[in-house]
Image (cartoon, rainbow over all chains, first blue to last red; front, side, top):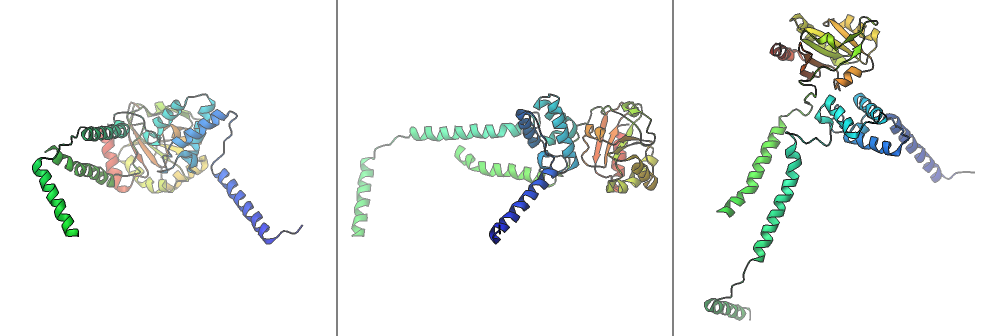
Length: 162
Length: 174
């Protein structure tokens, strides 16, 4: 069966893509867990740990040797039945607070956690104050003098536009 | 009056932001505090680079202050760091090496070639001790006091200009 040029091109492209995929798999070691829950926890943990060597990358996508070591340790600790928090604390105790993408609440980080909440509360108070002020605004009827001035203004405006 | 002050609010917010952003400009983004600061040096049982049959543990670092340097023969900056380490050992600092993720013959060859500042080298081929120390970039240097407490950490290679800085830390924790 002869293939048209177009379908040949398609085959080549598909093969190329497949080879990229397998390259990606070998770069970041694929780990297999029997338990889907554990696999999910592994994905979450490796995505929430920052690679200490490479400033803005989680260990799940980093090729640096230390990230590979950390992934291996996460998998090992999961198989040992350790809790997520235990694993995160273990890493932070060795590599520092830096590796946690969700920093722990302590003396230095409370502002980080409190500021968004404080801003929401503050913004809410401002909105409430505005609404209240608007609701309590009273409409005062015009005095005789003001009414006379208004009608003369309207009168003058009409005359000019005619 | 209060309304006038409220008009100043955006300006104050700007000043606050500008202060933090300006400060951020002069911070070193690669600087990390060590998690081990003020903590005990992790326990380990490993052989030495010099003797495959020997067994050393954390008691090696008790009784005297030591400067523990993590190095490897595959690490180019470690070669450049050797003259500084030799200078530190000449100034009377007890130097202990950790040969990290290396092979014994390559490690020994490295020392033959670039000098031997270390009194002893802990052989850590799997990088287990390195992991416990939170090593992420070789070379790294830890100052461990006589009680086995980590007092100072230097990540990356000690430049000739930084020798005095390290020496000052050594004297500080003596």
